[in-house]
Image (cartoon, rainbow, N blue to C red):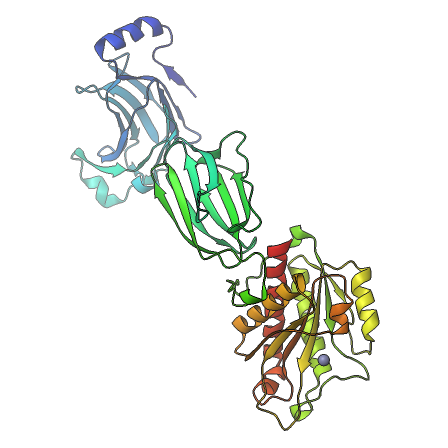
Length: 469
Ligand SMILES: [Zn+2]
């Protein structure tokens, strides 16, 4: 490959001349064409904005550099490939023109030519493989100066993220950069269950720290990281906080919040509505390293409640629990089961299993029953004992199930259940519906509905994990 240098030996004298002539004119310093890569590169001493077009008869790619000087009026390199010849010449209007000419009977697709600034003073022109021109286009031999323009992608200097901070009133997030960001995207990322703002061609300022988040603030997590050429800012809003759209004004990107943080769970906040991911897009929480104990109620000689058509609680809850186990494991949760088959287990060993495993959460799964003469009683309810994590867990589980199913809500309740009182971790007991209920029993009898319940319970557990671990 031959590199053409224009000013190497004469740099000092020519510089003085150039300044005298025009302070702003650029100089074409060097160019080279790689035949193996079909690529032309050139450098100038000052930034230039080239225009590129494809002309016919002969087929040639023409690169014009406005206000750019050349040492010599014309330079030509003959090549022995399909790229026949490269010419660099000075035009009358102080334009430096580079012409890449193809051998006769060949052409190329102008939309496949990639013209890109690799830094403010270096450009590359990547040509596609030339094709044999069709017979019809070879007939006309009239030189054609009406070219097809070729798109030019200028070099864009990366914006530096100088600060990422909550607004003074806590109702928004502001991202400051040293120059306007050319492109950004934002949205929920299902794998991390976080909201992400991605700034294209950006870098983090040196020593940019993360702001300290107050426990009752609108954000549970806020992180900025460099991902290749982009900066990704991910955040997790507190329950009750809704995110608006990202807007841009000059060097500032803003994300507005609405609603109030309901981090401190109080019984009055039961209506705190969460946005759950779709059931088929459960978040992976492997990085949280949590252990969850799942307790399918009853078993063995104790079938639990028996309802319409002989529907047995023990069968329903074992099936749902095993599915919850599998789904949690798929999302990176370590699961401890108090039983995995149809066997009878007392309440005490269930608690011991969970406590010995140092489980982070305990979820007991049951189905409800009332007299066979009350088929009108239907719905889902969740239990906790005392206040704190168990209450929040019960609330999230109920919300997730209600969002996923059309079950009637019987609310979050407190009860002195042994498994809730004696477990050392946040614990909840879910009653997934009534085996004696005219509405619930036919649903609970189907495999599809039990899968739906398992997905909804899993999603609730994962949501609790994301919010608390
Ligand atoms: Zn039960």
